[in-house]
Image (cartoon, rainbow, N blue to C red; front, side):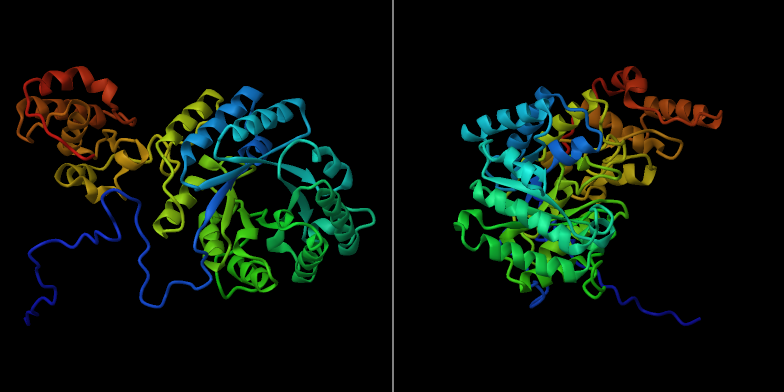
Length: 446
């Protein structure tokens, strides 16, 4: 039998791609020469809609709870510029009180600017005229699904006239209009492009501080991050055409929903194509499957070098608040779910024991303020026990430790007898603490 010489050669030290995966930061995007998209803006950031779309999606907010969330947003973004605005409803007394409290905080130095959301009607425009903000969002449904079935009689022209009348009222009130192109990823370019042009023409007579913004909404989550897909589903194609129509990166936002699992991918595609802002919610609250989870978007914007570093550890407090409201994130929710960094496999536990970055995407404890954790199952092995004891006691026991082997055998017997649920630390803590007494103290980055 012919033996082939290996073509893989050994090296004296491992290549862990330290530039791509730095010790103290999220993974970085390193472009091949000439591959960085010329359309990508120099900076990108996020805007928040928890007080509007999150509440609309079922988040039960009192005025006090809404302001607690707003305060946490300020702690999260700090001076980073990563999160710049938050929008509020204005129709109910509790929402108006939230907005007033937020405006008071913002005037006192809070880093997140409050804005509002209204329907694009003159009556609603007059409602926000004297509230004290600089900008208001305006619902401008763009697809024929809406323009033909929301208005009586229906049609594109009547919808455009109604929206433009409201834009005029907002401009007359001294505010910046932000047009929310609802259902854009099912909307004809024959409506969107002429309407955008008409809004720009209408605003041309007003100061630059009132130059309109446009929010491209993937309302049903049907947008695609694919360059070559046809209008209207291609998010990057739509962004590029709007840029070609004269919109700057800073005057555009992208607002996706997660109905088909593409919310973060579409957000990044929008940024690479030339949109500077992503609108969503911290921890992904929102209607149906939720809005863009801004922590996930910002992790990647940080890796792209487009935004400052927010304090992600603050989101543990936000999740605790949502738990109080009965709205905590699912156990397996990325980054901040209870089990997001919990392994149950023995081979993973063994890897964590030997070199913890082997099974961590980045320095989770430092960047998220969350531990790498483990639940014991029939597959966790002795390595799982070693890892769990070290995490909770700071001591490490050898695989041949007699007490450790006895504890493992007793747990194995339970699983062999039919136990299906995992064993958590609390269940073995008393026995494990006795085993660890007098054991060697170790330090672990995990």
